[in-house]
Image (cartoon, rainbow, N blue to C red; front, side, top):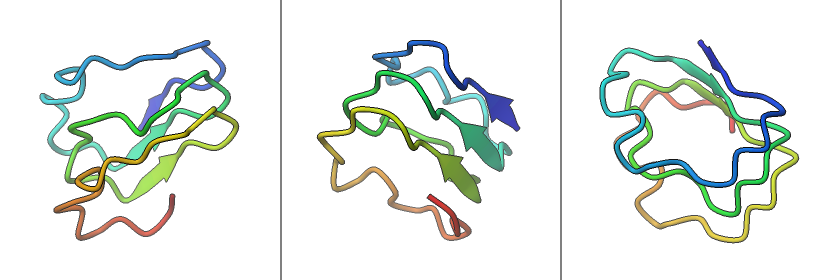
Length: 71
């Protein structure tokens, strides 16, 4: 799991998670994100992203995430 909770993150580089090909759980809650980060690992099962300022969800944000069961 990757825990990045309460870090005042406002942007995520599009290539930040490219090498995390087996990551299943990502916690980005309590930050300052305004959009769902691009290129999230397809292996994610759980993405916790509450308490952000999400205004934009790209239509491809969750494409290919066959095992995702918790957002």
